[in-house]
Image (cartoon, rainbow, N blue to C red; front, side, top):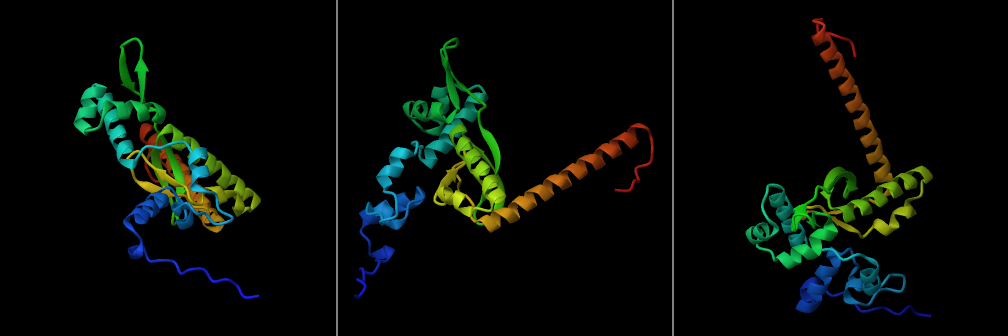
Length: 225
């Protein structure tokens, strides 16, 4: 029995403008080419199921402007004035900034107030780096789940636990996008590096403490590590 040969894949330049736009949008969401087209392979999840199971997120430009507006509000500007300065609609901000944890309506002052709910997390990002990201509360919750899964995968030597994070794209509050490391061998190396840095940091903290003690009692600063 001869195997049926499918049609060769078209080059990006050969696709219509509509398909190129759909492919670009799908790639930003971590979808494969077939999922982006709306014809997922047999073992793939359809884009529609992914959309219904994933919480809505603002565009990166909206996320950046929301963060800037929150920063302006922390400096005393009103929501309306900050929105005007960043050239974004107040209704758009109200829609997203509550969910992002940037603002909250105060019934006492009858105004929206900026909240300090951003999280700073060290995450393993592709290709092979440990990077500290500042993210909104929804993304922080997602990353916390990823980090817990990383620890579990390393402990059990089971890289398949990380498969669900393969196509996820993470946005920080400045609109920079990152993909998460899901290769187990790479994660083991990065985790060792992270622990080494913690040990070095603790040693340095102890060194500085010993120096400050000697300064206080007027001793000399030479000591053995």
